[in-house]
Image (tube, rainbow, N blue to C red; front, top):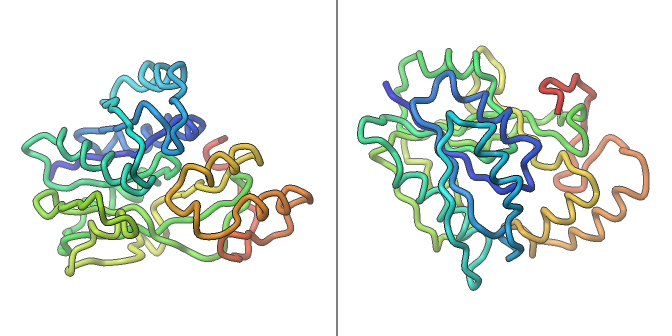
Length: 242
């Protein structure tokens, strides 16, 4: 069985990209990273960080493409994945779709894919973090998708389901290995400035008044809950020294 990993990336996540790549190299026959020449709020990408990302990760294949105004960030998230799929080797059997702030538990995931994969797609359970990499939600989510290559069908104009459209009818959610999540999701591990940039360029930017929520959050010390989904948190080690 041959597996490729496609990682959506912009340099706002430069902090995570090398650790993300390193976590998938042991089990990936290809690592593909599409990146637009603008972030999805229309700001030019940081070419210095793009070049550093490429030079520090020679085992990954980066594909730089042109961003154009007029479509939602979610459209471009889908376009990135389509570009990644176009680069897949013919002999790839399975594809893992990640975002660059998702870091895989390498040993657990390697063990998982050595078992018999009887489903057509899997949503992989993940830990979820907020503000700092030591604040981990007690609730478990799933975000990354593992899917058989021949079943991949991405509609860039389906703006709301993104990776959900990679889940087939024969799909397993919240997939664990040895009773544990296989991914650490650091989506909201940000400074105040980084969070403000995130909410101006991501697919959920019109869902609520994110700016006011962030301003309130950073007016005080972390209080053990998050404004995104009201999870409760525990304090854990900074596993990857992020």
